[in-house]
Each structure stands twice: as C-alpha cells, then as structure tokens.
Length: 125
Length: 107
Image 1: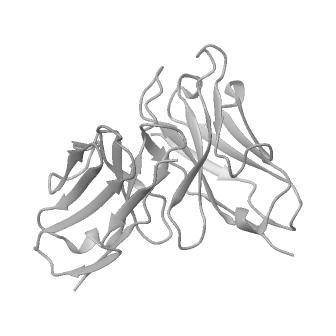
Image 2: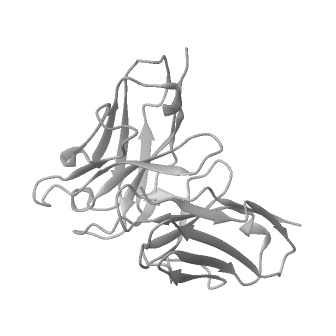
C-alpha cells in the first residue's frame, strides 16, 4: 500500500536551517509529482513546494511566495525520497509539514490523494 | 493568488441530517476544486476532486457540486464519524490554495 513517512522535524531557532525527508513506498515514486504542504496551528493547509516527476522535461519546481528563496525541494528517485531544505527559518514557518502524492502517474493533476502523517517544525527562540 | 472562502465556519448537526458546506473562489477556477476531511491529529483525506468526483473509497453520502466560483460539499445523512474539519482547495492555478475550513460537529 502507498506510504509516505516524513521525518526531520524539530525545534529550531529563528534564522536556523532544517532538512525534512519523506520516504515513499508502495508505488513507483519516480513516476509521480510530489508536493510539500504545511499547516500552521489552527489554520488551513498551504502548498509550499511542488516537484514534477523526473522525466517530465527535467524536474519542474514551483514554490509559494512565502518560502521562495529560503526553501529548496528535491528528490532522490533511487532512494524513493523527497526532501525539503529549509533555511532562514521564521516564527511563521512553525507548522506540521506533510508530503503528498499527485493522484496521476506520469501526469501533473495537482490533486493529492495520499499524504504522510506529518512532521512538526517549531521555530522559536 | 486565488482566495478560497468557506462558510459557515462551524455548524452543529444531528446524526442523519443533511449538511451543505459552501466554498467560494475569488476568481473562476472552472471545476478544479477538491474537498478534504481532516480529523484531529490526522492528515487531510481527499474526498472529492474535479468538483464532483468522489475519490476512491469515499462513501456515496458525500457529494460535490459547482463550477466557476461557487462550490458545495453535501453530506446526505450525517454519521458520527463525519465529525471533522472540511477544507476546499483550488488546483486551477499555482499557488494551490485552501479555504479556512468548516468545522462540523455532531449534536
């Protein structure tokens, strides 16, 4: 069955850095577009980074304006893993971070049918 | 970015009753709307996509409708396990955006 497991969340000081990982299993990871979605306490989710599957004209990446220039999404298809490198962290980056899979194989639908359980990132001094 | 506005913010409904949740987009998103259910401590679960298509394994009591800027999620006969927060999301244009959610409580 499809599984997505995030790790790497922690308490970090403002201005600090952190790298989140998402381990995928149960499906051909390299054939799917993936998204990082975060949810601040008591708020709705926010899509922050999206990466296409690797053979899609080379990976295409989108970022939300709130993280552009500070966060970097990448994938290692050989390890069935998705990553989010976060730097210059701010208080407002405090959230549960989810990785999510696109519903369609070899396509970009932007519909997320499987989500991980989430990893908590707390930014506080 | 496209703003998604949900109403009401919360409602309390008796088991067996019908529930209708609303979602409005600030620009037309065609039928590129999904609905999610989220229970405490869990990730959101996809219920509906393309405004009206049920995701795999979703009970028939959940239905979606709408196009353009106005959308709705209906639960035909509320069950106790339907107590949750429901979010709409547009995926017509990046950045993908979610509404603020509607909390459904069981009386």
